[in-house]
Image 1: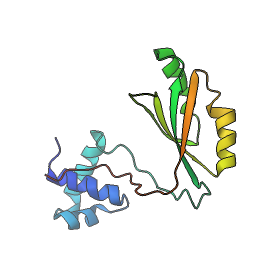
Image 2: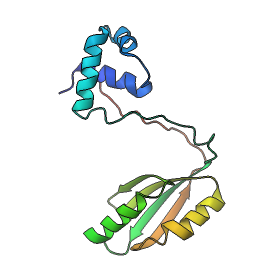
Image 3: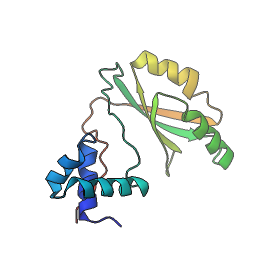
Image 4: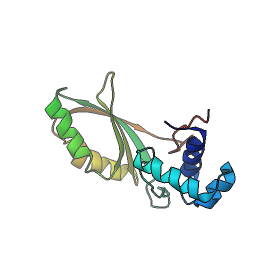
Length: 154
């Protein structure tokens, strides 16, 4: 069970994973040894899944974000498993979620430009066995983009 201090540590690390234990301790009124012990416990218990570097997709030349609604021809275990297996190998796919509703998956794709998306769509995405229909939605402006999961501090 998480207490208030654990939640504060998680919130701080989500903002800046480079904070030292001493810097975290300063902000939450705790010495660095208990901070270290808490972080290790949070990692062990799976509250902290991993540490990553967030890079600028624009600096890397990936300027187009596309959300795709994907419908499969059959809604059965084998068709889902095959789609999941293939989509995990596609570097352009940042997120893929099985959803309820009028389509099966919501997929977030990042590519350089429309030509790149067209090649990706025709040569890799739409040819996955079992894909019946894909609706593509092109992001015109990014209003909010965060990786921070809400952490209630109560």
